[in-house]
Length: 490
Length: 115
Image (cartoon, rainbow over all chains, first blue to last red; front, side, top):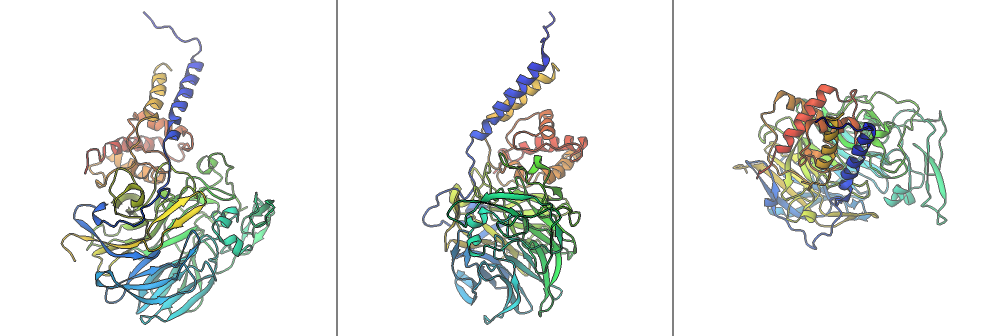
């Protein structure tokens, strides 16, 4: 018998689609907390066996109890030195320090600073170079002699905002470094008051590296600077509460935000290498001499939230503009299907004309993974020529809601085809920091660096940082320096 | 249409309320990929990895536990769903989409029963 046909096939189809959508919405019923949304134990447990690495590698803890460590580098004798930041999101200020890690994990203080955070470290020609974040006082690159003398090399960098002066790397007589932007997406907003700096520096804003012409797009927000709770209108690249107009030109300057700059080792004229980054935290030269940058991408926060923006790993071509604040990974933010946060307006474009055509990244790492320090593998360790990336992990819910913790691991990236593979991850039934999933493995990896011989990888673990709707809560003295080496080597 | 309707019904049912595998154990990278799966991996890394790192949960839900048929994978990439954007043929060609679906199906089996 021939089956009867529905007289209204369109209705059947609509019902099928509707029921499908309803059923698929079960996803929203699942728990969806970030890795920082947890209550850690009072004392951090450290157990190297809880970090899974590929067969043939082993993990050990070299130093524990570090206070917000952010970077590691080695002197001529191959001795590891770590930076303690002296500041952490959550508005916790301590003392920035450069420490030599001795055998057995004890520390010798080499130098201390006054303008936290100290974000990045390199060593060359008998001198340490530090990216001094300058949350208070502005950013600098400082040189530190082995006896602890601190000398500024570059000053007055635009670091009073969300993102700071980052890792220096020394190459061919130049010190290259990353400079982060003031804001999430070029518009100063209430989120910057939550981060602490808007009340300290109410006129601070983003500075482009070259003249830009604004589209005249403005953003209305609450005013956290007044008790009345009034509303203000703010344009891109302008102080909080200052609207923009179409065709308005904002003059470029050097130094500028969202850039990689360089200066001769001995001091001299500051030069722009490339710009259009958001927060170029990790810098490293590949074995072929190419500069790569790990860029922390947009958050879903503030007056101009951007949804679904993974962290690009960029191959840097000097003179190139990489797209911030109107592109992500080569794609316009006005493509709202991709970047519109649920229930919020599309970010649109703030520039009337793009300063260039941004390229595609070498790889695209997890949204909110906070992919930070990078270094390149060599034959003595394996995976020669691949980038190893420390992923600090998400800061949800402040940066946006996610369905599960992202980051909290070390990944390796084949920069020729963008392939990303886990290298060192916490054991457990789910991903996340040890404080959330149990055990004694990684909390928040923030930097990676191979030894001068290239036979071991050091991982700087910032320590425990929990997160709430109101911001971050870092736990002092919970940082760890880990070492990963081949089995049978010392 | 009659052949399409069961698929439309089946796909959401399969993707909806299954238990979520939040991450894959460290079992190493996929090896012995077919040419199509290898091509799909490149497409995945450029377009999908940022929201579903390693096929696991992230900004979006895990993909490594969904017994989605090939057709449903392709349909969802083209149409998008909820917060997931749609990818048209200018972004992912039909040939790349087929390769991507091959890779996602292969990824689902990776790590099952691993250490």
